[in-house]
Image (cartoon, rainbow, N blue to C red):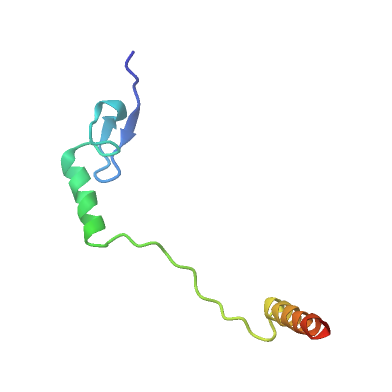
Length: 78
């Protein structure tokens, strides 16, 4: 039983039969090697979230500060 699934190559956008390609998810060795080259050149990058600094006005900072104060008080009681 042959499965038929037509997909587009992520590199060249050519339509091909997914299960018949030995280079899947690419249509050919050429497209596979082009993608590998991008990885080696570090062309692909994962986007980073901006670093948000906590300020005294921030609820998270205040909660953390209260937590530390409560722990210090409980430590002094023992």
